[in-house]
Each structure stands twice: as structure tokens, then as C-alpha cells.
Length: 247
Picture 1: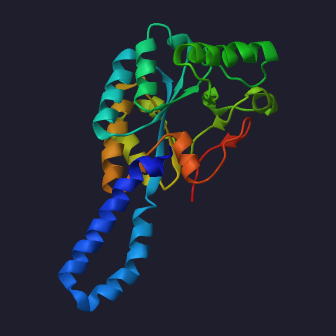
Picture 2: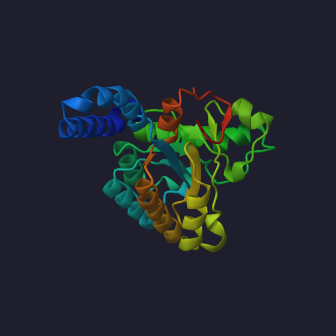
Picture 3: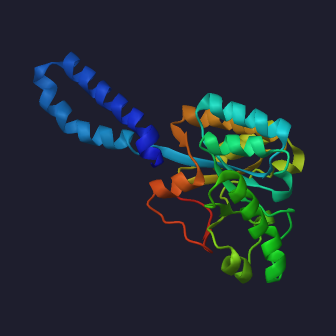
């Protein structure tokens, strides 16, 4: 079930209720005009601004747990690109992500650049992580985010899944400054953006939650990468690179 059918139906229903209430207040004299306006109002309600929060380099027990708690309180789904070497000992966190509707992706096993690797070394980074996640979660529909966003022809050929980069990057690793990160994201975010953060930094976790609150107030809904592209009727293809889903 896509993001519209799960969440946007609430907005659609609210729009219907609002229109009916206004119609009662205005009376029969304006009922025809109100009915003529209703389809346009409902269409606007049914097409909110969408944005995908993504997190790299986790999981880390302290910060990832705090992030999951904050997202759950806000009813928000995100996408997590995980380091394979950090899965052991954090299996419960990853199962929680999956159970709570977050999307999980591959960020290699040891956070190494994938460009220039031979096939065996690429497999040790990507296929190995995919198999660990498959064994843990029971499915294997994982996206790939190459470290540093570095790709080449071999990465695209061997990925065997869509490659997801980003359109908004506050470089949270640089100074771990929550206020600066929030300002950058709010300035750059637009309908269809994919935002890059790292759930291994407390400042980034706080920035993410502040951004959710601020963009919710601007009418944005948050979704996973998969939901974002499904809502835009864009098929994610293996070996293809995706940075955003602007309307």
C-alpha cells in the first residue's frame, strides 16, 4: 500500500468535512458554487508536498534509538542505509526499523568507496551486507547508497538494485551543528527532495526531528524513498541512480 492510501486519505477526508461544513454555513444560495469548487479543493488536499529523510552510517544504539523514538512520536517513516559491520549486536534495532515501517538499505559492509573495486571485493561489501539483512529480515528488496555517493559503471552494473543518492546535504559530519543543519535543510527542501543525514551524531538526530516539526508545519509529509517514487509513479530500476523525485 502506497503513502497516499495509508496517510493521505486522512487529509482527503478532512477536506471533505471542511467543504461540507462551509456549505451548511453558507446556505443553499451558494451550494452550487461550493460544489463546483470542491473537486479542486480535494485535489489540492490529495497532493501534499512529500520529502524523504535518509540516514547513513548506522545503526548506533544510542543515537539510532533516540531517532526511532522521535520518528515514532511524530508518525514519520524514513530510510536507513546501514553499515553491514554494525548489524551484529544491533539486530533488534534493525528489526524495529523494519517493523515500524522504515525502509532499509545497504551502505556497504565497511564503509568503503565502491569505485574501482573488482567483482569479488564489491560482493564482499554489497552482496555480503544484503545477505546479512536478508537473513535477519526475511526479504531482500534493499536499496544501495554508495559511500561518498561515488559510483562508476561497475557499481551500476553490479548493484542489482536501485542506487539512491540525495538532493539536500547539510554536511552534518562537518561541524555537528544542529542549528546550521536545520537552517540548511529548511532552505533547500522542496517537494520531492531526498535529504541526507547521519544517525550516528546526536546533533543530526536533533536536527532531523526539528526539521520534521518545521516542515510538517509547512504542509510536508515524510515518507520512505520507495514511497516517494511510488507516489510519483517512477519505477526504481536496478543499476539506475536516483537523487530526487521532484514533481
